[in-house]
Amino acid sequence: MAGTLLHRAGHVRLAAFPLAASPAFLRRLVVAVVGLQLLSGPAAHASTPLPEGGPGPVAIMPAAPGGQTDPYFLVPGPGAHQRPAVDPTWQPAAPAPSPGLVTGRATTPSRQPGPATVTVRAGDTLWQIAARDLGSLATDAEIAAHWPRWYAANREAIGADPGFLLPGQLLTPPTQR
Image (cartoon, rainbow, N blue to C red):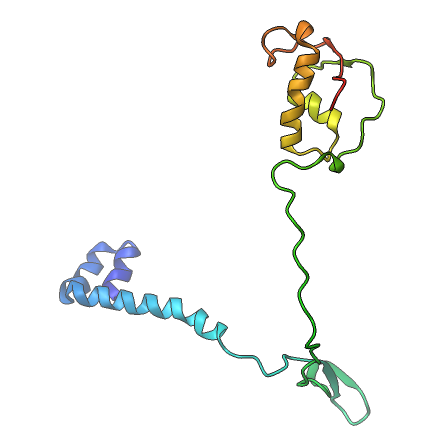
């Protein structure tokens, strides 16, 4: 073990003597035992049972006859080891159903009157424009379904490539969400 530690510390010549005196099997055995000790230590302390009922309430015990208390000297108070009553009729509530990948239209507000046209800003995409149109509560699935409507409503202004928008272009919002 000393040879291995010396070798890892960079003292190769000093490590050669203890390494030559012990066989490789014993070195591996020592490394395995030390490794198991390191791995099992925290697990052994984690499995230590707590007193029944847990730590419970804590009371401050007077340190001097004059009635002064020491805030750092705490002892278990009355009822510290009593378990709370359990209602035998209690049942867990059912989990809320998952909305799935595509939610209904109830999660986003209804269409409100917005601008008659939208001016494309530098760096805008139809995805970003559709996301702004739907609002901050819109999911990616809703935006993915909405940006083609923007393209369909503005195909003449945009052209054949929906990914090519020019700053200053005026786009008309789609009639349906």
